[in-house]
Length: 196
Image (tube, rainbow, N blue to C red; front, side, top):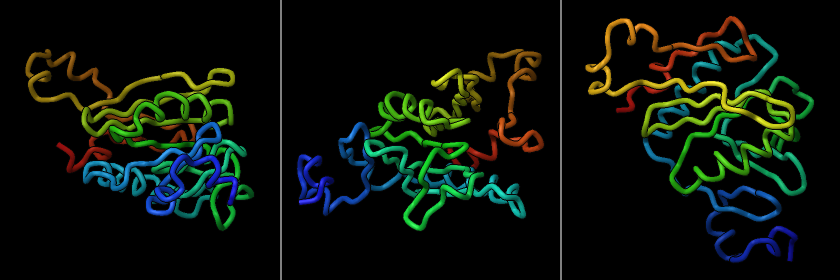
């Protein structure tokens, strides 16, 4: 029996639901099918980066295995890899430069917890947690060997906007720059296009 099957509590489940990640040496099942809003956000983010990275050395990838160590194998929703030496046919062997995880009810605790810690220790330069339910993007940046929350960019619901002054509304950031590319503005509205 393979080492993978030994670590998994229910080997039959592993065979029938191959969408898994390895966290601290334990196989964790991922959400079986992402929601429509999850897929739309993922597509929007991938498209933003794909357009920008045309002709550049960095590459945008999605739903590909990332091998960070013998105990940690993740499958981010979207990522940017600038060091092509870590790209192999079966996945990424090392830390991507930017990782995007789109929250699902079954994986949110890992995305905000242990995976956040591991990405920081492994050298990810920027980490986004995208919350489609609240139309918000949490951006985490390195602080030593961990990632800390830098900012949250969100689309406020109409009922909240109605209570704000024009001056307050004007101060809500609707675009932000990734630390990887100083000439790329990310539009929050574009990320959440078609997500109500």
